[in-house]
Length: 338
Image (cartoon, rainbow, N blue to C red; front, side):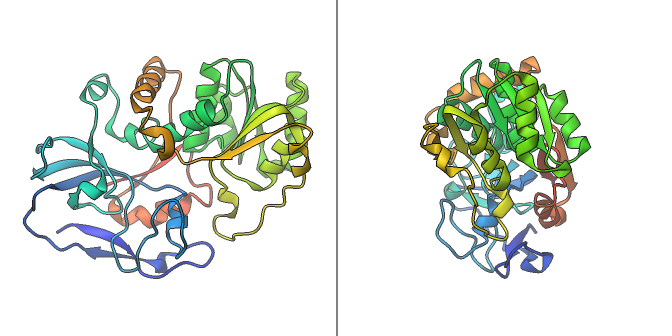
């Protein structure tokens, strides 16, 4: 019998294991427009923290004592849905479980056979060919309208989204400064091709960013891709060139404590004419999915874009993997192999 994680209490601050319970799912014959799946990979992502609150947001909140959901790669075991057959690999939103019955509300999509045949692994559609890669691609190229010659600052550059931003920007001949925490993560961002890397754990961000710009002979940044908020956002305001564009993807620095952003240098939005825009990748993704698949698939095939996977084993490990996102336990994409 399939098992799924349930949210049994709403966390205050950083969640704990006491907020979750692994329970069996009821079994039943399939109805029309339903699939029975065996999950292979699960995604855990920072945005899920917001879904644990009882508050309106862009993504529906988790209901107490109900199965949680999220991105997953599964194999169809049984189908009563047109266009899907046993053995098909699908991307769907029936995550946080090892399998079970899903319907159209879980948005099942078959993985492109031609891309799998070209050597892409199924879990790639949970990172560089999925939510995180799509977020990076849309945020950098559509929201920030980054172009060759721009100087780009990326926070959380060793994460799943940030590492994709670094590589997409380098593939398009931009100068990239990445921020990461600790020597190992900084070394990986350097290996990805970043022109400069700052370690936010080694000291304040702003002086390190200013020093990196001076070494590179750049007067400031043209694009800031924000995954963190806090002092990274302050440093971006302080060093922005005229008409800089900020793509605000996430502010993981405040997901658990809700502290207000200081924005010490917000006044610079006026003389520098800074444009700042928050975005959700689904707002644009389905309008450009074919272009994204073609572009990102080519970048991956050529080796211009790669990823490191931090893998937890077994559905039982999903809450620990999720909590690891907030302690910096992952390099690249955090995944659960079911």
